[in-house]
Length: 115
Length: 115
Image (spheres, chains in turn brown, orange):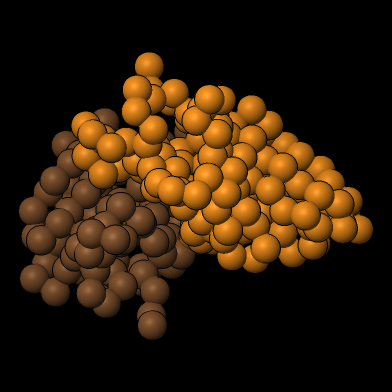
């Protein structure tokens, strides 16, 4: 069974630009989560999508946004990039089955560098 | 305030020695509890989880964790550490209510294994 996949692996942008990160969940999983892991700030929750709807949002400015598609894949968009957006962005997915609903499985991440 | 604490930032053990990584949580009701491991530049891999039931939980790679309600702890253990266990370990929780399904992580413990 394929795990969570993310693309691209790495990317470099300059301040003010916009970026889109992509995530494909484990087959059969309907929820997708986004986390930011920035140096010195730890792992912070960004967004949760389930069945195409945004269910929860972390303490991030509105320039962080995303969406979930009918096939349950997801995009994270970051507008007006700032230097402090440099981080590893991790996507996770979870199943809708009650027995495993609260267990999140992570992808390899996308390393974003903002210059 | 609700929080997850990993008191040890760095731990160094010799290969073959036993390991215990500490995790304490502060929540009104016992949350769902998880341990994840992250190798450098990689995503998070789930080691084990506790929802309810038997307080000693077995995970992958020979790891186990013990839930102690009286101490609000969920410590990770391994009887004999291998050099390949060198990585960063994160304790995480999902609250039963009001958490919006987001994982809240501890600050992590960096494990170094001496040969």
